[in-house]
Image (cartoon, rainbow, N blue to C red; front, side, top):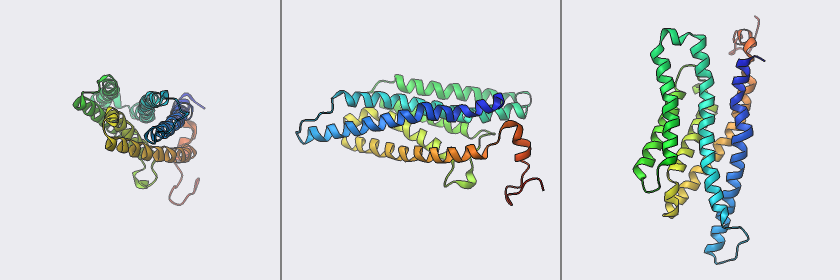
Length: 232
């Protein structure tokens, strides 16, 4: 394996070692939080400690940042590979500058979202929208494998939608303490995101099987994918 192959593996490595364990912990604490809330509403004594809700929120914030970071790593590698392979820096320096700015813009928008205080609804919505826009703009750059022809089971779109839902869920977090409706929206968004993450595990494994090592690319990409033949 070459250095390019290791960079390519950073996305699945981070997904397996960081993001998916966080998803498991957040899901567990979410279940515990709901069970405790239902017990309190029924005026029953719960063995679940009150701190479980705070732990769920804190881990949820970490998960959102991890998902956004993982998405940036996922789109970043093919974008950089395309820039190097096609000599984009020399031919279109403005495009490269734009991409760099968009990466910094997306990270900065998410950081501002974290720093915005609860009463600032407009700012929370604005920074969430800017972070989401940054992800989708970067994802639309040349080199990113989107598999639009398989829109039903694309790893790219599952990941982008899941990241978007996580950002929205973070933005509406202060509202769930004020309104039962917002709490239900929060639960619905995260349930959908959880299903998409499961889909990510399936489609990501599939894509790893289809992506050859860097030294194998000239041979594999020379195959006839329609008729499923290689070497004439």
